[in-house]
Image 1: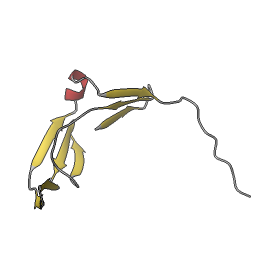
Image 2: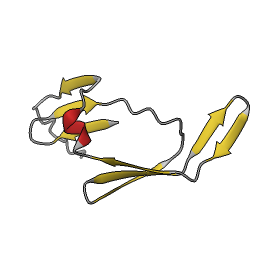
Image 3: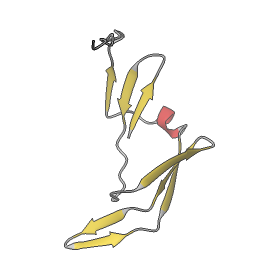
Length: 81
């Protein structure tokens, strides 16, 4: 999971251990909802009907795996003539 702060230009990476692939993620009322997807076990691909919710305030209490400040420079767009 990556969190980007627009004001500080800081990108933080958090590890979330969910054994799911191809899930959908939605945000509503300070929560992230992760829906469905599939679990790959041995030689099986099992569809998931699970819904997982994560309160975004938990990220304030969690130490990021990695943190980077991105450049403050703006790359100008060149007009093609």
